[in-house]
Image 1 (cartoon, rainbow, N blue to C red):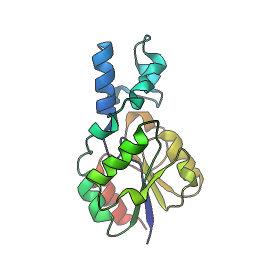
Image 2: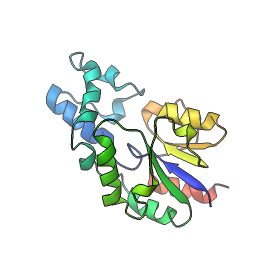
Image 3: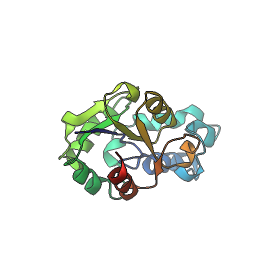
Image 4: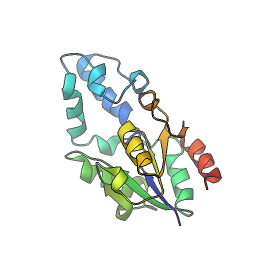
Length: 177
């Protein structure tokens, strides 16, 4: 059975909307994921915020409030009967516990036993990585394995197959050998 490594933030759940909502509220701005043309969020915020944009990722409760992306849950449930599905995500402070709780609530058929925290996803054994982060996609592809991108403006320069949503990912997998 092939192993799928699936990223959590901005692939399974919508991190950007809640993250940007909090920033926009505090800084009276209108940041959205559609405006990000590169991975460095600090390049898109007001000067008085700068690197502090990442402090929102340390706020207790942030990850518990994230909504699943459309069709993520239903497609993952179908895929879990055909593949060994591992959730591979990186994390900061509070997010370890919150991400585990999120998986238990929304993905009980995968469960926390199949949740891996890693900043170096290319080091995890698996046949395919579904991710959004350019550095993860590039490193996994360079390891000689298949990487597929959840399509965002900030990862356009990465030369890997890409999909716009979970139904497209499921369709892509049906043709993958």
